[in-house]
Image (cartoon, rainbow, N blue to C red; front, side, top):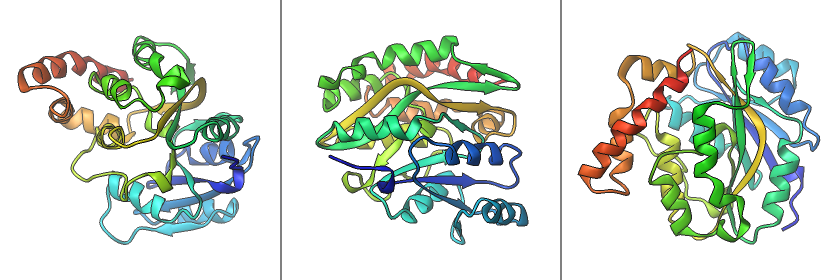
Amino acid sequence: MNLTGKEHTFVICAYKESPYLEACILSLKKQAVKSSIIMVTSTDSPFLHTMAEKYRIPLFINEGEGGITQDWNFGLSKVKTPLATIAHQDDFYCRSYTKKVLEKVNASKHPLLVFTDYGEIRGKRWVKNSRLLKIKRMMLIPLEHSAFAGSRLVRRGILAFGNPISCPTVTYYRPNLPTPVFSDGFLCSEDWEAWEKISRKKGDFLYCREILVYHRIHEDSTTSMVIGKTGRSEEDYQMFLKFWPSPIAKILTTLYASSEKSNEL
């Protein structure tokens, strides 16, 4: 393949009035390889119109049902390029993100997803290593080797023990993916559910082991709010059932519950 930045779009999913939105926009504008940027929201506001006008970004309003999966699917439906990245409004994308993604895609004959390693922003700290990040990197070691990128067995084996793929880092090769990409019904595991569904398809999961995205952890993030109110054990259990019989799924759910602490400040 020989795709360029012209075939890639960042979709910023904006919600209310995030104080971090402008930093996210600037990180996309400063990419070494330029691509298109659009913004979508289901919470229309003067603030978002101001940001969109300031940076000349097309803004699309989801006037249908709102929600995480609904907004993500709506955003992808507005993309006109084969490659799309759902940029979370609070996160930061390193300057070489698009460049590295294109390199991975162009080396593949049948790409599905491209994703990268990531760090976290916790207050004023930019964190590259933590216990959870190290565990996720260990889980993804097989996908560091291009020979395993197209293996259903390898990627399903990885996903059977949890979700090490960080959603903000993912770029989608839309022609090879189902529509819609995300299914309703999950609040925390909507991305894991999508990876599981896509993992059944023929094609490549392409992993770049460089830290190219920093995911911001703060008390107003969606995951933090959901965990704080309800926990995510039931969703984790439903995902493990896609790979394991109930007794094993229950054990794995208990072990996996410790990951919730990673979204606590």
